[in-house]
Image (cartoon, rainbow, N blue to C red; front, side):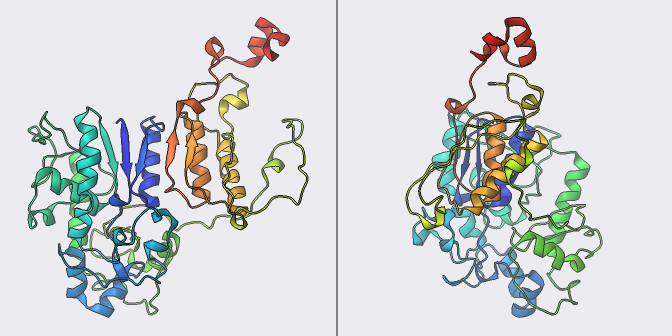
Length: 417
């Protein structure tokens, strides 16, 4: 692809990063738009599905989940989950921020993005990757294939199985070739082995039919809204063994209501102890020209309204550790480099930094460092501009060669010039 579109939700942004790394293209421009956010479930947001069923009844909850036009109760603006209180949506007007949405509402908000963004890129010859959520992806599919209101209910989107559309010169979707894996009412093609795809689609269909709380979850007595995936995994452990064929299922109540198949073990508690970066490197390994500034010291960003720019060098790479000239060579972060980047993010968080935009190079080590930093800040939604102008110096014929080898060949004095 030449470009990636995703939502502003962490699960989609991180999926985009993982995919771009796997296809060796972390440098691709990534657009994070609220129009690809999953459906807003209103006052149900963060409420466990079994509790919603107990409170509102099976038929009502199923209508909210599967009906095209039914909306759950709206959340209030003082609700902890109200998007208007979240800085990532500061560029939206109050009218654009939903208090609740039907499936139709969710699907309709992607139309401008298709018409004025994605479609234009495809027409100019770009391959486009869209990493989003069940209902916004179904909205795009409805527009592309002109799917009717009843037929769209039969269209599914299993997790992490690519669905590919091809177009003619008039932007009409091409029908899949004989023998390709598709689904009713669509022209796209699944990239997956037939057996695995069939199993994933079957699980999605069964999940849509299951009434939350009807066959499991009766032992939960306390109703509580959960705010993180870690909490939900622990509290929903007793719900994993459900109907036949749905074992090893974990549901994130803040996600899109679709099945996530996983062999994930119970999450381990991570250490939150922060080690200062300079404690990890001996003085013999690195010499810095550091001077202590005068005045009253550093002011926490949260206490200051003055604009700032923060510079961070990428974490260490295997090439750094081996003493190789790297330059424009796209070396990955070493394990210790990943920790460097995380520690940089923790330092920024400790000092209360909140950013509005991130600039980085088109080299993977800088991009991954930026991602790790903003993940630690819980600001993965930030727009990230990737520019070749921030690439490291081009070392020409020295690229990939050891500094020791160059010193022997050209002399220490020439190396230091």
